[in-house]
Length: 484
Image (cartoon, rainbow, N blue to C red):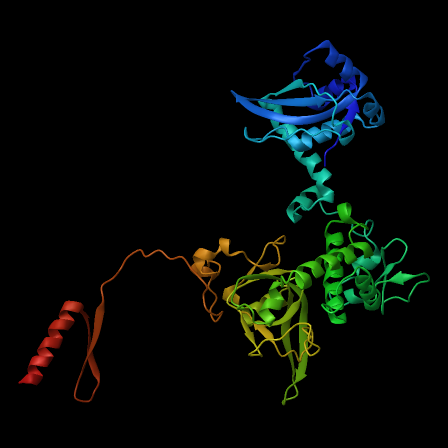
């Protein structure tokens, strides 16, 4: 956003000197009139003009445009020089700017007709001090971008070492999982999590979070009620609450008591309505269940539940069948695993929260597919008709910060949409087909033919290994004997 600020020349130069930590600063003023205007206070808008590399010394030239409108300057005197420098550093980044980059100078709308005279400020950064300045700049810019969209890895860098969760996260947030997320209720006043239905008695006071209240809110926001149903609301409410609670527990210092709020849940529901229902951009699991796209496509899914179904056999023994509930953050499906994956589940190497990269999977149980919003579909029940069959050779653990959903084809188009098995040691016996493997042929042997010589009792008395030429000679001799 265009920003216009006012400051005096002495405070501006002093702040630049303190920030540069002793680096040489040269200020050239073109006229005494400019000095007077700068001293009295004026609007400053930074404009990155060029970056020159001279034998390892980086020189950044900033051009600041000044306005002489006195009334506008008086209204802007409350802005400090710190904001000026933050504005400059966020736009110029001080380093890593190509010579073709430039920022168009802006002028305050209240002072559009005022005169602007440039002041050239040259800051010289020496190589021995550049690394420390760069690390400081990256850290400060990361903190300034907390209100913007950043990656999980960047957030983990800001968070630092894991700290105690109990001091920064509400106790009700720590007890949220994928099964009880739909029962969470929020405080109507501050929007923070209040209690989970069934675990605690309803406290005194007003609370919100029921499906009916959310539906009424969506209708009040002029959303088309014919596009969504109560199951759509409860389904997305479940996954949104579970995701926000997990994020708070993972980053308690940055997101504690700030991320899981009723307002944030409603904002996420609005986004999902715009994408899925209004924009018709269906998520991965729904496309797979609808059979709009093949289940063999590489997908990253998260384990939301480890389902254990017990049944008695005829001999009286109890048999336990283990399945996984996998989700892309929007919808879920039930998956059956092979013996090797079952061993990893028992060893807790695959558990709730683990991310799996799956390819060459099979959707069994329905020829025409099913919609996850149908009343007959429930991915957490034993009688779920539609199952995703995955095997160990086509399943790998994904990174903790991997984005859920389909993997972009640009990463694996040369492998036919699958991932590469790195070595023969990674091939698991009885683990299904191998998606792709890169082999190097060290030596090619000629074709050999095996011949058994038997006696009259059909007992093998001799075994010969013949080359292709010897086999052709034997074959011609055999044909000549039969022709006679």
